[in-house]
Length: 245
View 1 (cartoon, one colour):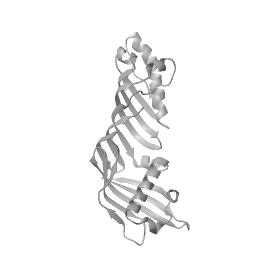
View 2 (view 1 turned 180 degrees about the horizontal axis):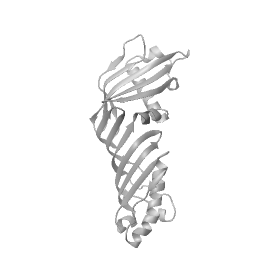
View 3 (view 1 turned 45 degrees about the vertical axis):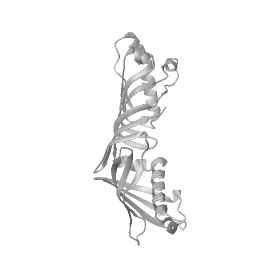
View 4 (view 1 turned 90 degrees about the horizontal axis):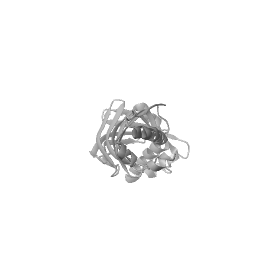
């Protein structure tokens, strides 16, 4: 992992704080990800602000990061109005956020990122639960009984212009394997809501696909997406969120 620390601030106090604060921020950022290829960050702020535990801005750029099993090719973030336990950091304690931090930035995910992410429980479980919810709501799960999470696996994903295609398999109690195909257009309905339209699920080679109109996913009040763009082999997300202590 390559790490670029902030430029040295000019005054003696700032140099002292940069020697204490920069390593603490670096360790905290590193603790948030499972792995990262490159990590650069810059701290800005005056002496009085920093000494009071208030960091006006931290800018972070990372490449090939893994966060909770999600693979991200590029990450650019900027947190503002950050309050930390500086008094404890000076005594050698780990850095800790004291308040939620508003963060703005953008993420870039490539096809290989999503493929790798599908091997982690966070994304694979979410997709499986999403499928089960759709099937249950449309009275289809009974024909696949028993439908259990561990019987579904996901092997491939494609990012196309405005659309995702997800390929998997369902293994039933007799070990018979059925292909699963989910095709979904992905758009922002609001900054907090994703709209999947059109949405098509193929889970039988003999029956026509299930076609649903306008299924929505609530991202929560702490998320505020400004842009979601799907092009061939790439997904771009840009917006704001709150990082909780």
